[in-house]
Image 1 (cartoon, rainbow, N blue to C red):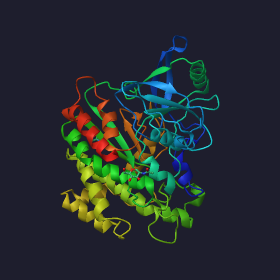
Image 2 (image 1 turned 60 degrees about the horizontal axis):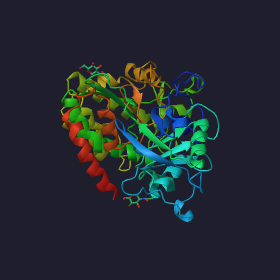
Image 3 (image 1 turned 60 degrees about the vertical axis):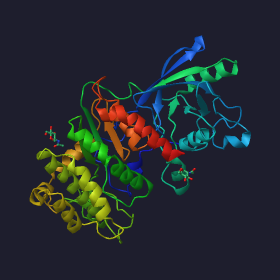
Image 4 (image 1 turned 45 degrees about the horizontal axis):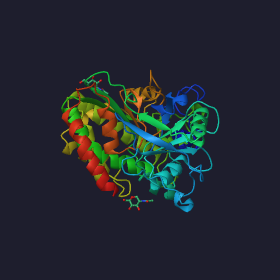
Length: 427
Ligand SMILES: *[C@@H]1O[C@H](CO)[C@@H](O)[C@H](O)[C@H]1NC(C)=O
Ligand SMILES: *[C@@H]1O[C@H](CO)[C@@H](O)[C@H](O)[C@H]1NC(C)=O
């Protein structure tokens, strides 16, 4: 429905993002290219903005026949009710459904089209503007259920281009397009650098559940890639700062460390109960330091072991989200606790923490990468990944980041394996 600068919204009132003012914040829309192959009079290549759900075919392409439904043009209702089906007949091209923006969540449109048999969805913007990223709605129970099940790719296209496609369709022309994600991830060399902007908070609802699930599922592949030297992974954590005038307020004291310099929202959004934002900041800092210390000993992949063990052994629900539990995990992994503590510094000090300062600086976009504003965010070769945070989909994006012929075996084999894994899960 709208561009979701979710972190800005989540935050309670008066803490501000440590970034340039919003007017200067750079949000880069990740694109795939869309080529019209017929009819002749509208042939050509256009940009389209990849939706932040479903499964974009990173590294691949898809040719399809564009259909614009006679009814339910916005796709907000089930197509069944109108007797419309997009299932393509055997031997024919997959159906790419064109829908109009408006009236309901983007994700709902895509979900309705998928249920009716669409292979991909193009949403035509309803105003002339620069392309934006279609994101999932704020977590609410009913939408969360179907978002998980969206498996087709989707993209937003400009209003004027949507108009051309509709005109051609209403003229009775066969409209064929090719969606191409091969250039959506740069692939300059034989090593992929990627980052995950994550959070140790395990009680923030659907987004946290999805993130934890992903980290658990992806750990094996991530460790194989890292141990083989195919990737260089870096975890990141977002923090906020408290405006100077409020550093002594109750809210900032409960949400921040280092005198208001690094803050996180209260997990329950209630200052009086449970864990506070500052508990989350401290654990995030510990996870950063686990990475730093593990990386120094040339075993950066131990971070994946730490975060997954911590999730299992130290959940907020069981009131174990604390230093004691974290230290037990650190010890079990043979990491140097003293080094990690030194790296974390004193959370009560009225001074910068170099590790968190670096994170705040890294939040601001550089080069082709926009500011990180959606949490979680995955960045592959300095491009923000769009799509569902799911093992198979993310593998595709990472594998698309290797220069041709330098992909590790896990990429070549995972295609098949993950596909069957994916379809087993879906059917
Ligand atoms: C999503 O898929 C799961 C597993 O296949 C299924 O149990 C669930 O009912 C689906 N949800 C919706 C909203 O269709
Ligand atoms: C991890 O170590 C490598 C060298 O082994 C270094 O290039 C990289 O910058 C380190 N990452 C972080 C976040 O310290």
